[in-house]
Image (cartoon, rainbow, N blue to C red; front, side, top):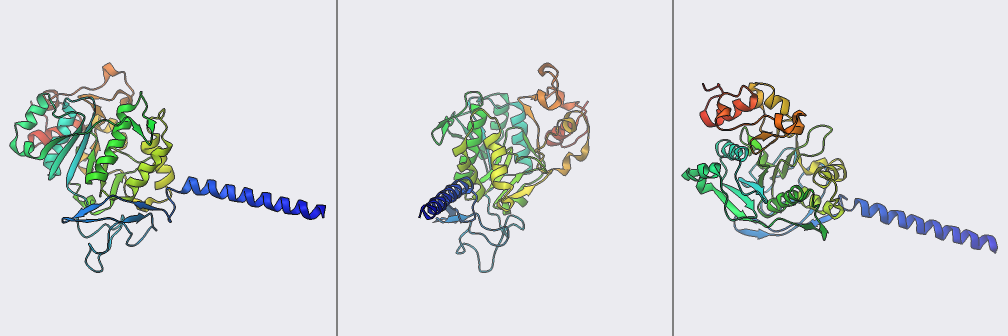
Length: 350
């Protein structure tokens, strides 16, 4: 009798431990399980509002992102082959918090968007109602640019899922959250203020979501192209339930790459190299190369008119600085890019 009781207690204990481990495993993997259904916001399709759930799904074939009623019979697509029509609106988004002056590099970015992307609209989401600076005045003096550019008020987030944002990194972390929010609301193309558009991004508007994700790296958040119901957007947002305020790029890049994309890469159209999200500082500011035209976009790694000191590993005072005047004679790849944009040719202007 004593042996039977011991056996039953051991069996019960093993069952409890097994159930406990199963709960832990399920909780850790709940965001990316193929059985998880995310309730996506409604998406407008030619004036018709539909609502549906999106399943993480398998790596191939037609997924549940779009309702079958929207597509003609037999039309399918995924993040590898794309869809036969544009499913991402041609709207470019920027986010600006605290700093309400349009800088030199942001001006260059917008000019590259207007010329090379020709968007239907450019939305600048800002905790302000209008911008200022000589560069803003230049843009507003151009009727075609003024017609497309809109400043939309957006208050800077200060928390996520009830967790206060880092005081040290608040502008960065708030921007990370804001770019997710505007893409989930509108869809379109999000750009950091120092991203240069080299050639049209329209080929990527046929995918559910595209981003720069170089080999062996975390995803790059500098350029994001997405339908507003993109599955990864919503899963990415939910990882902020594990927000770590003290880590700069943990929730923006490290965690979603590790827990979602590495396991389910089919959720996005992965672009290697050509979005220019890796550190191209030496190529941009120490070389004078025409090969910049091979990219779709380039992260200029600049704040205002000054190259970020860490990317060239030099003191702030020694970081290259640029202006509308110095760009004329700069014998750098960056100089070529800007002269091509403003003057229509890469050659140095004497």
